[in-house]
Length: 91
Length: 417
Image (tube, rainbow over all chains, first blue to last red; front, side):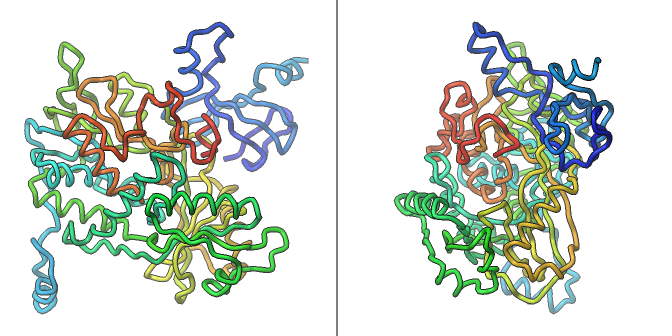
């Protein structure tokens, strides 16, 4: 697996660290216990196309949102994750 | 058939042409008291314990491929019971005791070899942590010995003791730990379960659950037709989320790939199982002579049964740090298996919120050693509807109540357990 970082170009997997599924969104501070439990512990654990957060610690240190197939390891898209990286890329 | 010295002699004298099948390849009946999904070690062990300990013999084990084709055939065959937390300590010792009598129980040579497991420590802090774990084991009646440097040097003199960065200071030894022949464990349980009337049905993929008006699971839809069931047990580690999703459940589990490696065969070198404490590397030597070893999971979600190069490099570096002389040994084979990584690194054996559906999952990368224990306590749960006392903490709701069993203290990040 190689990941084409939008800032650094294609790099080997060892430069990246995995966080996990990009779909769960942190609940608001006043959210119910059920919502927090769901966010922290339950996973869709998709077999197929998924969207994930990866960190390019061995390069630009940007958080990336990577589209990847968990059955084949094929990567379909790489973009900056929401936040400072996305703002930098939009300039 | 029953195996003995006489059956072996008879078969040998007739040119090995008269061996009968080890177990019966069954076709599905309309209905069973209990249907187990997953013909791996855990599923087959569950069926055998249901039939032998709990008197429930109208049981089917459904396997998508051939039995033992999943993680039962993809592990590094290590057995041990050196866990430190309440919940795990007693359960894995129950499993170890069942390993010790497995061959007599099953009338099958599963090649259980108690050649010892030693975890090496490389710092004062790690020594203290291992001493604590060893004490926990001994308080619970499990054998453990804390070895100092001189004792380790005597036992395994070929290590790189001069490593300036990760000096070996000693190790925690469990002499009753060791290895077993993984395929034989699968065949042994199939052999013994089949003899008691359990139907083992291969090439039978579960495609859905049959439910009544109240939502209770009353059977399974499969690629070989509908099969009715009083109760359905899932033992499909690696695919737990996918099967549970058919019943509308989301689990606290991620599927990750773990790689394992075998070198070319060399003369006897490694006496038991060794682990490198400064990285993550574990190794034993198979009876054929190959070094069987592994390390960390790759770290990203995967169902692909194959890994990537960075972890391969990391694992081999761990081996080289411990035993530089293996640098000349060539790698023969490498493969990947899909681990049910739970949110606290410990398994789940419990009823599900869906009536009639029972869950055996979340084995992370420690499922092989648990095979007999897992089968025993899961059979207990299926037969009695209450958890076995040694598995009472492996509840599905512990993530909600906070009663986690997190040996590594990593929190809800499955790729770090």
